Image 1: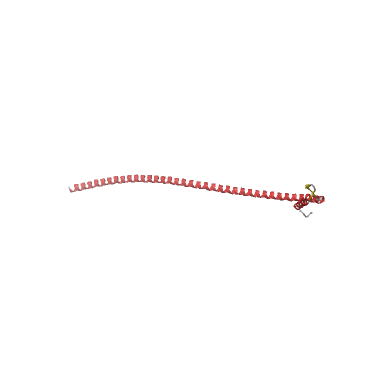
Image 2: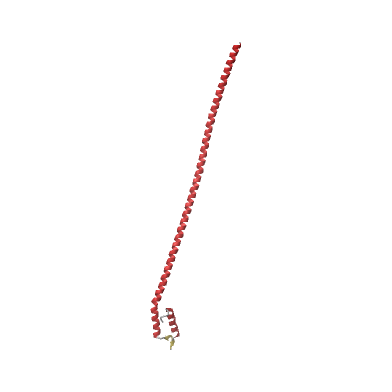
Length: 168
């Protein structure tokens, strides 16, 4: 009987009880070989700790596998969350850089408009001053020319009058 496992022994006991002769006037009662039943029960008791130990080992292994799988799943979830956070962070950095770039472009455009206005104002002022200087110079030239013309005419009149005085 040592070769049999608990399930086989229980199955044999079940068959023995089912095949046992019923007692007269007692359909629920039967006759069994006491020594054989006791030997089978002793065998079950002897093997039970081995079976329990094996089942405990199986349960512990299963629990260990479940725990390991749970830890791996938690690690995968944590890594996925870290990667998602990193990607979100990189996206935020990208968006901030893009915003700063757009702000710099706007500032540059505003500064260019200011410089254009300032240079236009400066050019207009320089041309106005040049125009005023040229106008003053032109007036000086006209005055000088008029004085020169008057001087020439005065000299010609004196020369003509000196020629007329000499002819007379």
